[in-house]
Length: 361
Image (cartoon, rainbow, N blue to C red):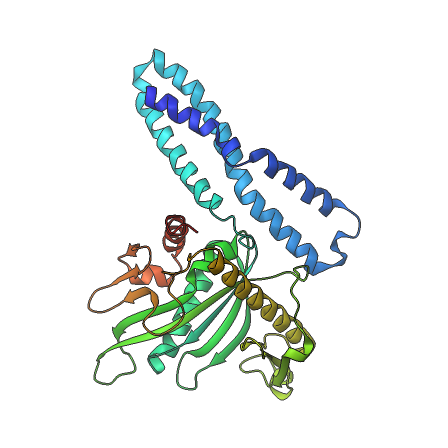
């Protein structure tokens, strides 16, 4: 019973640990801003504020529930002192609260400068021929299903299909509470081993797809990009979208000459809208580059972090000789390949958050 009493005290102190008062104040500030006249005049800014509100509530709501349940636990403990028959009920309640606390502790790790922002996720087929193109499309489906399971919105920004099967590359925007915070650990090379459906001899094939994740930066973020440093190219969009899309150069590609960063967007019929989105993608990538440089200068935090490139896979997906998916950094493993490909990625995302703490980041 002493141990249970100690657990109850730990839950009651969650408000201090997670800075509940400060979060409440921030929530009130955002709600006041949203109630002001003209708030919705600028839709893009308004949506960013709404996103910040959702991210804040994603922590405050379960925190409030945990604090309330901790108070109820105190009452149950008092009853248990007089009636030993309910000790089993107390133990079950403590286990439930432990699980809630662990979930909150994970969310507390999402404290990076842009963790609450949306994520721009790009997938590029690498080594492996047609199998790699097919693998890239499988991964697009995987992230799409993950977003749907977690009530995130998803927009296709760009897609370049392969002539034979699958895709060469694509970019999507994932928006919702802590989207970038959860997905940033997906950056790197993803390796698939399977019996190739494109090989008549039924041989085993290893293929690779590279994932790059950057935060969706708001226009308010200060970063200088000179127009003279950016080359803009236009081209005809691929895929469905009507005659207008296929007959006009509505798609936009931006090349940042000093850094070599290339972004492109073709999801809108309007070249103007595609250009605006491409500029946003470019600024996001440049901000991420600067953050990586700054963190590397402070300490060798990314010394062991797998980068995009052959042989640096962060995760291995096996369909042959057995079925399993294993993260090369955290060691987290799932034995059901198809469950992972159906969007059940949260175990990998949570394991990466814990791993980062162990790496000193």
